[in-house]
Amino acid sequence: IGRRSMGDAFRALVLDQKDKKVTVEFRNLTTDDLPDGDVLVRVKWSTLNYKDGMILNGLGRLVRTYPHVPGVDFSGEVVSSSDARYKPGDEVVLTGWRVGEAHWGGYGQMARVKADWLVPLPEGLDAAQAMSIGTAGFTSMLAVMALEEQGISPKQDGEVLVTGAAGGVGSVAVSILSALGYRVAASTGRAETHAYLRELGATTIIDRNELTDTSKPLLAERWIGAIDSVGSTTLAHVLSEMKYHGVVAACGLAGGADLPGTVIPFLLRGVRLIGIDSVMCPYATRIRAWERLAKELPIGQLNAATTKVSLRDVVPWGEKILEGQIKGRLLIDVQDC
Ligand code: NDP
Image (cartoon, rainbow, N blue to C red; front, side):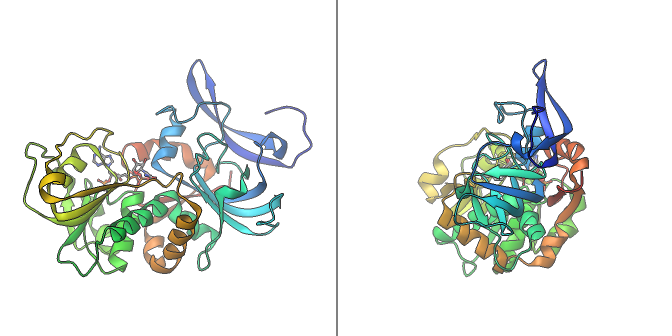
């Protein structure tokens, strides 16, 4: 950064390190400053995910090299490409592949990435809608697909539980499951989000405090499936409440990375625990998940779950997401900074 260069100028939020502390500032960069890659993209939209909150606050050692442009997802328009799959003007979406962690990401108005990491903007979505979904929503669809692959269906008698329901992954999960005809129980710690969760399609609201008891390996059977973005005691408790052959899709660790439970739910109820990884997800699965999001996620609900902010204002939101204070998805207007 800062070397003499002839590339196109743009603005970016740049993280750096001073006295082992992470600093955050906006800088004027040029495309010559960007890392290597096949495709140069004018970034229009990015989002704030839990991981972005960690990165903005220098947590989790997710970023090893500074200076760094964060932003784990983005949508935008191809400016130039050395890969035949993309030409100038094509609209593209990126989530995962450790972009925004090991590679500069979406909090800059330009990004250069590998063609393999991109997917074409899914038919039926515009670039802003694709990022209202973003990494969190994409992960929710992967979780729903995992439940289906394990045989869970809306025809079964019972509810699917979504934990951390008012957050990004949780909100989109409630919305998709409800649109697919499941009966959805949404667990939240925030009473003020109950009406919002019902609007997204939750049929039952559970106080998150009800999901903390880990003293017994098995509790009364409650859920045919679960999508969990909380982890720790919540996940351990949910495992003990699964119906016979119930399936849990574990997406996140907003409540902690530990898992203080027993193997009893697996042995005595045949419970299945499936890990969801949106980062290294294969291309065919990505395309399938995006196609389904474009067709099956109700756009009105997506709008209700989306708050739009400018990149200029993103930093304080990064602290809020770590405190569990964000409702739904935070869409970032990257050209506005
Ligand atoms: P959000 O902060 O938007 O949502 C997390 C929600 O979890 C909060 O809104 C809150 O919901 C609940 N929560 C937060 N802290 C606690 C706590 N201490 N105890 C219990 N519940 C809590 O984050 P995202 O939805 O973006 O991400 C959720 C998790 O999923 C993160 O750990 C993230 O890293 C992970 N993730 C994983 C991906 C993957 O590929 N596996 C991809 C994307 C995200 P409420 O207020 O309703 O209780």
